[in-house]
Length: 144
Image (tube, rainbow, N blue to C red; front, top):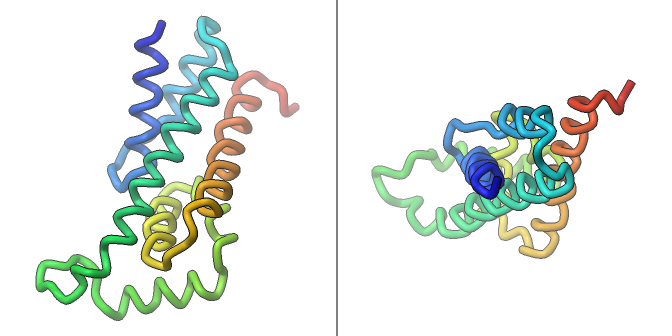
């Protein structure tokens, strides 16, 4: 049984980084199997996903010092655009960190923008925990 929780943790962790992974199908499968404690699954998935986002935040904080290198993957223009959007929408944009495609880069940009760690963790945990909770409710038919 412990292997399922460990697998879910690593799936959720990887899904929150810039790797092309996802954890929702695994979570749904574990919920449907009815062999695991629901709150434990939600806690493990949320913890893994938040810690993966924390890696993005840390990478974002370290990213700028390499901006002048030829191999740097983001142009100065794209960095300026990302900064402009983050400054416009601020830390509340992290409520969208649960979304596919844009969520992971948002957490990276939060690091670049020097978002305070405490506020980052609070908002990202709320967003990602709510996503998994809604997914669990849909899976169990609690939403209609």
